[in-house]
Image (cartoon, rainbow over all chains, first blue to last red):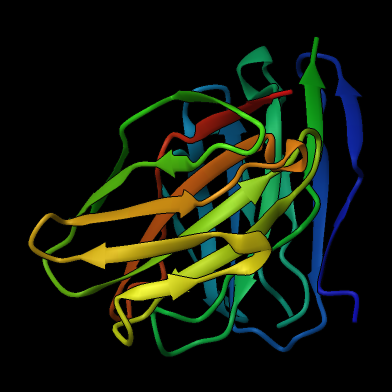
Length: 114
Length: 113
């Protein structure tokens, strides 16, 4: 099983450039989310989706866009990259229903904005 | 609202000695609690989870955690540390039908030879 797949793993952007981080899962999970990880901050929720066509903002949504046209895919778009968006990004998915359901994470995407 | 506090940002132990990583939570309702481990430049791996069944939860690689409602704690322990346990550990809380997870800020575990 592929689980949660993120691409690219590493990316360097110039300030003002745009890019999309891809996330795909093959477990038919309704819930998907994006987090950013910064030193000493843990993981902070950027955006999440509870199903195709439904997205909502998390704790730190500014500067990011998402869409959910299919159950499998949940891309994260940086419209105009800023140095403050240098971070490690994780995509996660989870089956619906119980809060105890395991969350599955991708391997992470290391983004540097110069 | 829910929150998680990992009481130590860095814990250093010697190989073969016990490990204790502390986590306190705040939640209005009975939460589900998780411990995840992240090795350098890797993703997050589930160690164990509490979902209102047994209060003592056993996970992978010899780790276990005890849910103590009266103390609102979910500390992670291991009787004997291995060098391969060196990593960052995250305590995570989730409750009810709320899909949002709240992460602690992480505890970096160093294991000395």
